[in-house]
Length: 322
Image 1: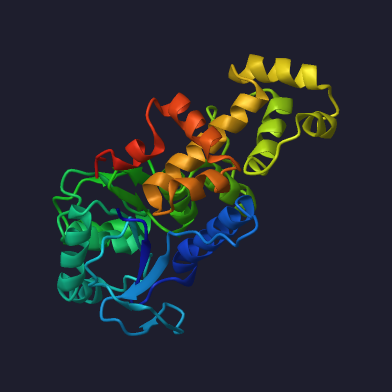
Image 2: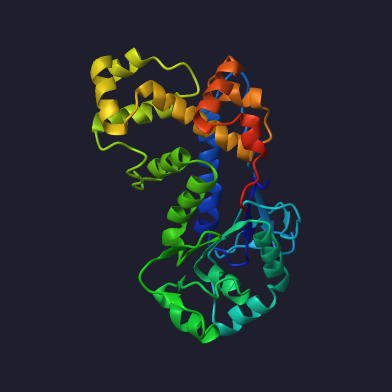
C-alpha cells in the first residue's frame, strides 16, 4: 500500500506553491497527533518526501536554495505527488526544461501506474502535457500562460471555465491561487474529510460540505465539538451544557438533522477513523482500537462488524482498486 506524499521541487518553483503542500501537510500532521493524543505520542504514518530531479538542492524562483531529501527516482510507490508552479520564462527556456525532463516524466509514469495521484500547478502542468498524461483532459491554464502553452501544445484541449480540474488520478490547477483548494481536496480523499475541513478552517477557506455539517447550527456545532474529542470519553451532558441546551433537546435535534443520535455519530467517526488506519497504516487492529477510543478491543471488534459486516482484519485484507 502506498501511503507517502512526494513534493518534487523544480528549478524556479514559487515558494508559495512549494509551501502550499509543506504547510498543509504540517497542519494535517499536527491535527492527527492532537486528535489521537494519548499515553503515547502518535505520529502520522504518511510521510512527506521532498525530492528533486537529480537529488540536489533546487534554486527557487526567488533565488534561494531549497534542500531536498533525494532524487525523484525511488521505486517505492507514492500516494500523491505534487509538482509546484514554477517560473516558465520564455518559449526557449520552457522547451529546454521539458526536453531535459525525460527522466522525471518517466518516473511520474511509473508512479502513476502504481496508483499515484499527481497534482500540478501553473506551468508545472506542461510536464504532464509533455508526458502525454493529459491527452484526454482539458487542462486549466492561466490567461497569461495560454499563448505560450498553445504554441507548445497546439492539440491540447484547455479548460476555460474552471481554475482547477480533478480527473481522479490527476489534479491540475491553473496557478497558485488554486493550490490550497487542490491540496485540501487531496487531503480529503487521502487523509480524511475532517482533516481537510480543519485545514480549511485554519487557512480561512469555506469548506462545509452538506453531507459533513448539518444545516442546524446547533447540530453543526455539536459535530465539531465531537470531532475534536471522539477518540476519548464523550460526555453528552457536558456537550449539552456547552451548547446551552438539554441532552433531550440535543438528541432530538441531532436525530432530526442527521438521522442518528450523538452517541451513534461518535461510533460513526470512530469507524471511519479505524477504516482509514486499516487502509493507510500498518498498525495492529488492537492498537487501532485503542487509538479510536476503545479500551476494550472486543467492543471495537463488535462495533466494526456492525458497521462493515465483516471483521477489521477481513476489511484490511480486501483487494482495493488503485
